[in-house]
Length: 174
Image (cartoon, rainbow, N blue to C red; front, top):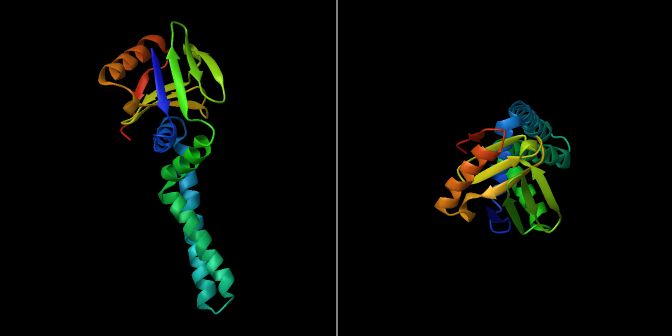
């Protein structure tokens, strides 16, 4: 079975990828980061307003407010921010990725690399509303867009995941 996923067409996939990976393997770390960003966002805004209120340097107060807003936005829109940044970086180098599932390996071909991974090396296999995520490690993975699959191919891919991979297919409603 061969699947082509076009990353330029599906930049929003990276948001789903980061969300699924965070739920699957980094839930506590992501929660800690979002708490960190929230605290520093609040502190930056409060410090900036305080500096402006006591008549301090206006530039320092505005920088504090701007930094606070940056951290607050990053805490609120964490997955969208990561997806945006990943999509911008990947789109410059990778357009289309070809996934080939043969008897023993997953073969991944794109503009940068040709990889062959045996089925047993995958750390996790995940499904969300719009993507399938294949994790080789807790940090490295591959994304397959469901919109690039027909209804029959989606079911065929699920069956292949259940048959070939040692890790169970886990669904996240994101």
